[in-house]
Amino acid sequence: VDALAGGTVTLPARTTLAVVKAVTQDPESTVSVSGTALVEGNNTVSVVVTAPDASSRTVSIPVYVTPLSSNTSLSVFKINDTTVTDGSSFTVPNRTTSVSVVATAVDADAVVTVAGATGLRTGSNSVVVTVVAANGAKKVYTVSVQVLKSSNTVLTSLSVNGVDALSGGTVNLPARTSLAVVKAVTQDPESTVSVSGTALVEGNNTVSVVITAPDASSRT
Image 1 (cartoon, rainbow, N blue to C red):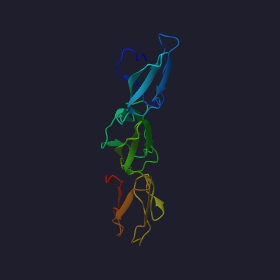
Image 2 (tube, rainbow, N blue to C red):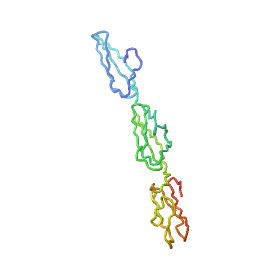
Image 3 (cartoon, helix red, strand yellow):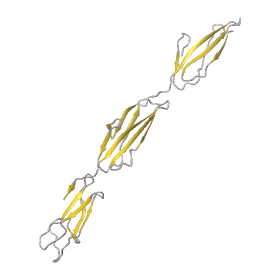
Image 4 (cartoon, rainbow, N blue to C red):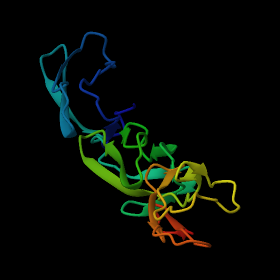
């Protein structure tokens, strides 16, 4: 960078050494340079030109080293291709175990890490994106990912006193049977079953089986 015209010389972040090249008009003059070890912000590099008669002149060069960026902003923040913001909530279907997270920092020198995008469980989960700026500043972005509860009320098996009742129709039991023993297995292990009408009388009876899914929807 030309420094002969005066003014401040601006150098990129992380520059730690000023390399000075000075050419004198008199080939017998000498040049000495000091202050070349640079720090972030303002510096002064001194160039002393000594003529053959021992007279000298000092040229002070202001040198500004650009500070490391403190930018922790994201230019892109998406979950499953949907733009989200810090503190927002995102809903996914039941049985979702992972989401795709795209988080791009505004500053290319910032470091972005993502946690919580896998191993999701039913209910509330936290996806956490941490951005560490070039100067060490840190910002944490958190999105609540809600995995919906199941609405599954399907039975895989249903029997009354050992007789299959899943296919429908009337279950015929022997005379003197006074109690219906109902066995019901749900497809969703988190669904629950309640049974009523198991006390039987001679003739027609109705046994009711209510399956309640984790999301509280039910089927009889």
